[in-house]
Image (tube, rainbow, N blue to C red; front, side, top):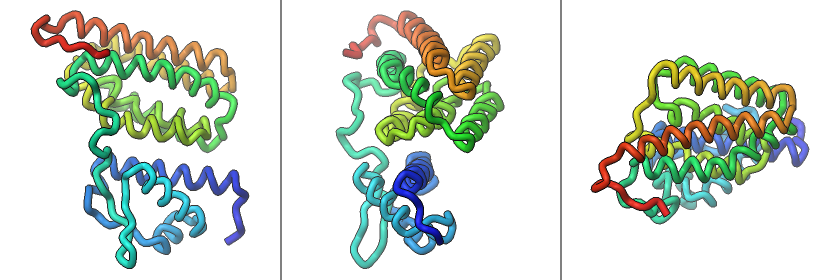
Amino acid sequence: MASATPEKRLNLAQQLVHDLSQQILSGELPAGSKLPTEEAVTKARGVSRTVVREAMSRLQAEGLVETRRGIGTFVVDAIPAGDFQSANPVMGGAYNEVAIIELRLCLEVEAAAIAAQRATPEQLAAMRAALDGSVATQSAPCMRTDFEFHLQIAQCTGNSFFIDTMTHLGHTLLAAAQQAVPGGDAEQRALEAREREQVHAAITRKDAGAARAAMRLHLVNCLTRAQRAVSECPKTDRTSIA
C-alpha cells in the first residue's frame, strides 16, 4: 500500500473517527463491545495501520474507547459524566433546544462558509446523500432528521474541532432537546427542506457568503420555532437556560 501524504492520512483518520463515533453514539457499537482489531480495520477500510492508530488515539482522547493492553480496544460510555451537561435539569425540553441552537449559530454559520471553500467532490456527494436522507424522513423532527447533513458540513471544513463538536451534540443533546418540541406540519418541514437545499447549493458552488447566509437563515428559523415552543410551555415548568 502506498504511503499517504500527511494531509490525506489526516482526512482518512478523521473519516474513520467519524464513522466509528457514529456507530458508538448510535448504539450500533454499545458500551463494553470490543472494536475490530487494527489489522481487521486496515483490511476492511483499505487504509494504513498509521491511519487506524491515529483514529483510535482520537477516539480514546474523546473518551469513547479505551485500550486494554494485550486484550483490545473497547467502547466506553459515549459521553463521559460531566461532559456537555446542561444547566437545565429538565433534559430534553424546549429550553435546551433554544440554548443548543444559539450555540449552533455560533458554530455552524462559519462552518458552512469554510465548507464552501474546502469541500471535496467526495464530501459534496456525501452531503448530497445526507440531504436526500433527510428529505426521505421529513415526517420526523427537524433537528433529528437533518443532523447527518449538518455533520457532513462539519466534515467538509476539514477542522476536527467542528467535527468533534457536532458529533457529540448530534446524538446527545440535539436528539434529547428535540423530544419536547413538535415536528411541525408538512408546510414547515417543506420549508426546512428548502433551506437545507439552499445551504447545499451555496456550498456546492463554493460561494462562502451565500453558504453563511443560508445557514444563518436556516438556524434562525429553527430558533424561532424553538422559542415559540418555549412560549407555549406552562410557566410552572419553565427553567432558565442560562
